Length: 219
Ligand code: GLN
Image 1 (tube, helix red, strand yellow):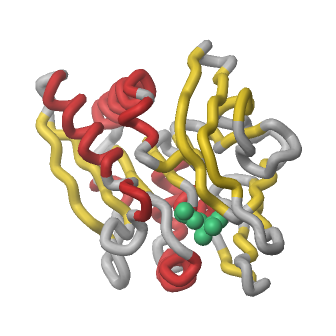
Image 2 (cartoon, helix red, strand yellow):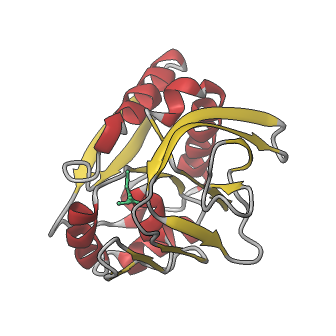
């Protein structure tokens, strides 16, 4: 088999080495003897959800996020179909934010997300959440370590699970001890640096789910 990865806006959303997640996914696939094909889908490109098994959507600065958010509206239906049919997504920071309802940036501008998952992100004045993070995922009984750097404060809707409970650091908003989100086969996080290098057990889980999805799909 060949695992098909969509690197969503990979030429625009790739701050703080988020692309390293892709290298880790490729490395783990190699260890499992699986071939990988990566395609950047960006501004003006068509995204057909049945063409991919996994989406990697990295973080970005407010400037890039604004451009991407506009273009994403034309891909919204297909992206939601992908997620609802069990497609696997890894969303980091800015990518995480844009899968939700909206992101209010530092200038107070409201950047529309695609509302694929129930959460929203607001700004804070003259402050960023920066530093090491540790979270614990109860469902998998796993700990994830990382580094965060974001100004957005994300609040999950009822029934949306976090990727983990904050043990150390700020997490989504420094209030409710949530970090990231886990919804269907979507894994989102504020961890940069990149997430999967420090948490290889998560890389393995994501690939296994993508392999499952690949075989379950009806073409
Ligand atoms: N611009 C967003 C924020 O600061 C996302 C930043 C990022 O992806 N690192 O919250």
